[in-house]
Image (cartoon, rainbow, N blue to C red; front, side):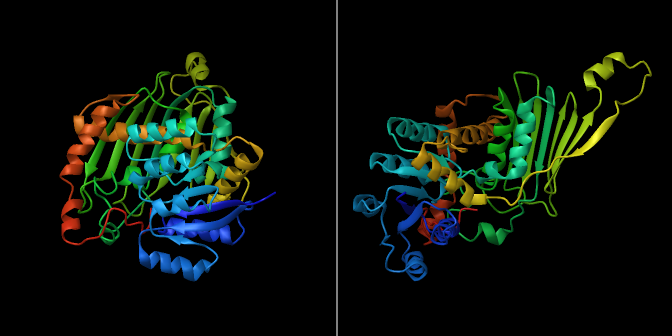
Length: 388
């Protein structure tokens, strides 16, 4: 079967990594056919790495006009994911975007509408969905063996970043350049997994601290409560200013609890369901007996190459995607809800009022220190040096 000619837009660390993955043959069915970035230094690196056989473009207009690719992988800063994807659909290209899908739901919804009008395959680089441990946990939840889930608590405080990290690019940690902090940069995978595991809540109450632990204008510490229509409650905690950090997801349900931590998945399964024990136990203080079950998961982790392979199968064979691009809006909506809850000091119902959110974001974009950095020659928002 003929290889799909792939173009990559954005040659920061992720873009270069993805290009190398393709050139190394780790994503069969893809052939690196072109790269695009406005930065001359990064284009020079691409020429050195990939040779004269891979055309380089310093503008997306020239890239799309050349007609030398069948599909595009977009690895630019967040604000540019939707407009570039929409342009790609207009040119009849299949699209794979880096996370997050965008910064605010309106632009993501418009991207999804453009995807729906096309007949192209639209994926998002949610490579955490393909990790065997995450697949095993989702299967356990969907099997119903846990019974009704009462509570989920996820603390992800191992995203530590130093001040020098935030100072490394003019767009980083600014409302105008990045559109947020730990939620939109480090945590989209975690937030996507949350809704992939548990679905979407009916409302959110969040407490985001802006520049509490660093000299930045966006959030670097978050505690959010998610309330579900079926009575489940969730707590989502994250930070880039805690070290040593941890990453622990604990799920409490009728049949005990599940803990995901330190690359292990452990099911503490009660022999008698908790509600039944509570109703029938006559001893006053006591707990139901339980088994401790280590849930195995296959290795190794397919990582980014796994999502690329999945995307290729969808294009060539019509297989359903593990991470459809249209599902990226769920993560963005939860991020928007957490930020808006803090800005308005109250609960936010889902779906988010996208017009109100955008108005609140625009207030902060207008006052963003990114503009001062630009006046001082601090670089451009189109700086694509890294997306971590």
